[in-house]
Length: 342
Image (cartoon, rainbow, N blue to C red; front, side, top):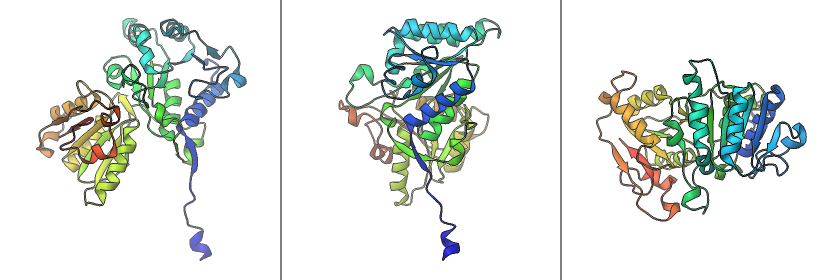
């Protein structure tokens, strides 16, 4: 019995998404003195969501900088610092406030490398909570994945669990391009198993690569951020009914890993996309369009004969207008979230 018990898998350490981002930023601040963090309440208050807890005490005023409530101003300062050779992490208290600074994000950060003929890079990270939270109304509930994913010159990442969060923030900071990291407020306090490799200071999650969270043969389910968890819950329920879903965590919105998605659709013949954004011109709409086009010149259409159905928003109550495990299960006739079925 002793030999058998020695083979029992020990549970991994539990780490919240908040602490994973904090750990990733801490390691990069320690690794490269050019990295600094600025934003509203990031320093002495430890961040509005405590993501930067302890960093000000460790690195001081020069590298952890509290700013006035002026997104256009401090985003511009961050972009200028990046052009001068530093590596700023610009935190928006919520990405809804990034609308105040969108000229800096798009016209100054995203386009400069192209407009300078490749002479001027802008290594900057724009990060903060994205999407709907709990009872914060329409102006604070938008998902910006499609907004920023639309723009050339930006890389856009969207973590789900703690492993994603740490690996992507470190990759984003090291990248020489402007990266938008869309976090989720409701995920900050959620603990996930943290494998030993993720605890290494060298751990990175590559930008542009999706992850298959669950293998399946009947339906491909593609999602990002918080709805990935809903998809996995739905897949567990459907498995009991004999339907095996392959759940793909996108991790990156731009550049999109269509190779992984296409390979899965060619295996399952069916596709469901789930997101927390609006249906029109959304991330799911782009995935469906690329599948129908066969973006990588593979005959994907030969593997899926169904027509695309858009499952539109129909209820005024916010809890019914966002993805949930139930809506993922009821995708063919669901009318309560931003899902696509083909």
